[in-house]
Length: 338
Image (cartoon, rainbow, N blue to C red; front, side, top):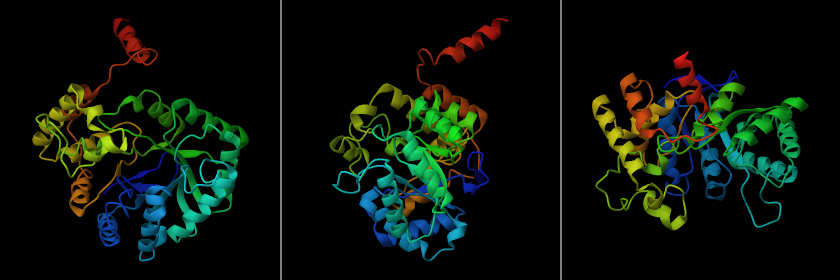
């Protein structure tokens, strides 16, 4: 596995990050340990979790496994924002909740520090200064090494960066957005901000809940029973069949299969490698319910798609752009006439 700097920091992380949302949910503790061990054996050092994953079970499993590892060899990321109880202060990004949440995450993870502490989403109720000043204190105290954001809009991310800059506080070093061949609106503002400000991009759902895994093809009339998509409609998840069963999706998947055959790689490996070659991306977050899924995903690192393959995938997955995001294309046409 290759290593990349996380944004403009001096922190090196593996170019695939292991997501642990399935641990303690679809994947039992023994299988979780095997998946974590395999990831490390293959050179991975970047692991992402969140306090809300199975209400703390994911962090607990990672914490137990961590006792068998050399802690300083790993880059451990977790997140905070969503409800961890029924109390009025059991969610959000207030000073009270952040201080309680980081203490509880450290206990579950059985570690003295968190390498990357990420706010899981924007909190419209809490003043940004309250959140960012508290995160700054956590870094100063040594409980957290770096801070990042997830699921922010462009203006929210830029505002947070400017508030930290004006106050001389620690600033976000990374963004964890949804980004994949079926979700490219991320490029319209967020990637530009990250490149301009030096933030590393850690895409979640790089296979869009399984749509890009190779399990789905145009002839299907319903999702496979063992897939995440089969539950998505019931659960109200964004990757549901009704949201993606359309011509755009099938055109992308058709091309994905075509490229995977040409490259002699699986569709999942091609989709992940496409992300690895996109501007600003540090490490896609790969999830795995089983060892077989992990092995497939690990095969996305260590090679590069040919330019022709990248062009095909870029073209078929390109979204229709409207004002003001069409200004770059207009500028290019103007320059072409000069």
